[in-house]
Amino acid sequence: MTKSSLALCMALLFSQQSMANETTTQEFNDTYRAYVAAVKNQQDSSELAKKAFELGKKVYGESADNTANLAINYANSLDKSEQEQRFELYRTAYEILEQNHGKLSAQVYDSLIGMAESTPSAKRADTYLDDVIAIAEKQNSAKLVADAKMTAARILAYKGTGERYYTAKKYLEEADDYYQENLPNNAVDRISADFLVAAFAENQRKYSTAIERLNHVVSVFDQELDFDHQTELNAHSKLVHLYEKTGKSDEATKHCLAIAKMVPWKESQEQEPLYRVHPKYPKSKVQRMEDGSVVMEFEVTPSGFVDNITVVGSEGGSAFEREAVKAVKQWRYAPKFENGQAIAATSRVQLNFKINN
Image (cartoon, rainbow, N blue to C red):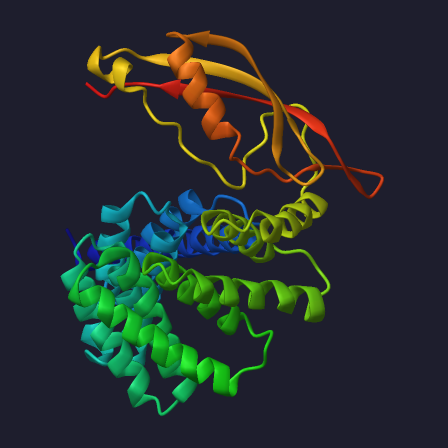
C-alpha cells in the first residue's frame, strides 16, 4: 500500500469515528432531554436514565464526573426494591468522584447517601454516614450539618437496632434542636423532623410526645399552608391510630373527619380503615390447623365508627365470625361526606384466617 493510499484510509477512519461520536452525542442529548422531561412530569424515567448513563460513558468517558452523575440519576430512578443494582450504581459514582476529588470532597456527598440508603448492612451504612457528616462539617454550614444528621437519623432508624438505633436518635435530636431554633414553623425540614421524632417516640411508647409532634404538623397546615398535602393526610392518619391506641376515640374522631374532607369516598372500592385491630385466631381452629374467612357488611357512622355489622358470608364456622366481628367493631374510618356534611355509609370487608404451615 502506498503512503498516499494509507493516508486516505486513515483520513476515512477518523472521519467515520467523528461521525460516530457526533451521532452518539446527539443521541445522548436527545435521551437526556427526554429523561429530564420524564422526571419533571413524574413519569417512569428508569429506562431513559439507563440509556443516558450508557451513552454518557461513551460521550464523556468511564471516569468523568458527568458519568458519575448519570449513574446517580439512574440509581435514583430505580424502584427502592432494586437495592443491589442501586447500590452498585451509587458505588460506581462514588469511586469515580472519590478518585477525581478526594474521599471527603463535597462531590461524593450524594453518592455516599445513596450507598447508605441502598446497602443492606447497617454497619456499612453507619460508616458511609460518618463521612457524610464529616463532609458537611467541612463546609462550615450549620444547616448542612443538621441536614446530614437528619438524613443519617432517617436511614439508621430503619436499618439499625441497638447501638445504631441510639446513634440515629442522637443525630435526630441534634438536627431537631437546630431546626426548632433556626427555621420557621412551617419549614419542610421541621415537619420532616416532627414525623421522625413521632416515630421514635411511638416506638418507645412515648405516645404523648408522638401526638404532640403530629398535632404540630396538622396545626401548621391548618394555620399557615392553604393546600392539602399527603404529609397532612399522613399526620391525621397517624393521629387516629395513636388516639385509638391510647383509648381516646373522641380525639381520633376529628382527624377521621379531617381526612374525609380531603379524600372523597369511593363507592366502587373497599374503604381503607384508618385504625385496624387484627382478629384473634380462635384457639380451637389453631389446634385443628383450620383456615377460614368472613365477609361483613357494616355502616360507617358520620364519626367514622363501625356499626350494624352483618356477616354476609363465611367459611370455617361461627368461631371465625365471632372474632372477625369483635375486631372490626374497633376499626375507625374516614366517613363519607355529602354536600359538606358527614353522613352514614355502607362498606364491606373480608377477613381471611390462614395458618402458615
